[in-house]
Image 1 (tube, rainbow, N blue to C red):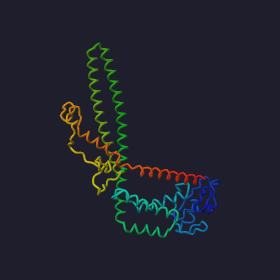
Image 2 (cartoon, one colour; image 1 turned 120 degrees about the vertical axis):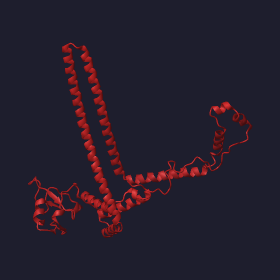
Image 3 (tube, rainbow, N blue to C red; image 1 turned 180 degrees about the horizontal axis):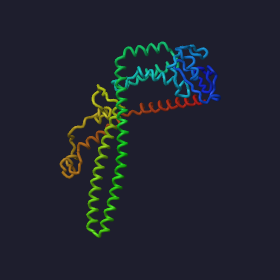
Image 4 (spheres, helix red, strand yellow; image 1 turned 180 degrees about the vertical axis):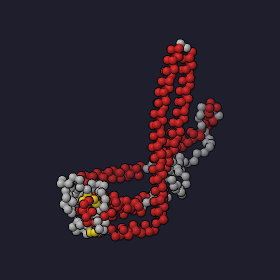
Length: 343
């Protein structure tokens, strides 16, 4: 059975029963208090004098005219969920750089999603509203500072976007001006060359071409400088936008500097490589200049030999067989779950 709150009937007004078929220009409005829709004429007629109860049967919620708006999404349930998420986001506006660890940030996101889910699906509404109000009261200063920071970043981002559009417009105008100057120079060169040929002065033709070539080179250098300036400005604005989107606050790392290997080391816990081992076979190599010049080191031989000797000590056949058997059982359980879900 469908829920009347989420029923999407775009064709008829529930109050005056006007239809889009008879009035193609009819405009429906919705109030986010109860999410019931009605035509604009009924809104003006019922709520012109002030707040009034919703005329939809079994609703009775008090509505105001200034709260009515045009529905954005076709599904009213989606419209309501978006409004709930916007409302929760105004209070829970922390970002990842507000937390010391990723785990704390993920727990925070889980809490936000749980509150949103409860409000959207009307589960424990009173307790959820109290929880939302308690968080807002306890973090009022942080919420205000984060909102102000977000507004400032959005304003700076909008200004950077506008500046980028302006630089693109200037680049287009410069390209048009370059083509116009080049065309004019070609016409001047052509006219001057024809005049010189008409006068019979071949030396003047060569001088004219050299002067035009010099002017063309200067123009191209000037254009290259202007393009470089515009490119530098565009790259600076792009970096500014990226920094604003990523956030500028830095977290304090308590675990020390970043380790790309995650603490992995090539040191072995079973043996320690000594600098010297008594071995008559290696004495000649130690004193062989040709071997050392070729890049052979006796200590590397020590490392390789010890590694090969101790490489199998941490491998236990019984434990490996038990692990493989456990993986097989886990795969079987997964297959059974998939087959049950399909059946």
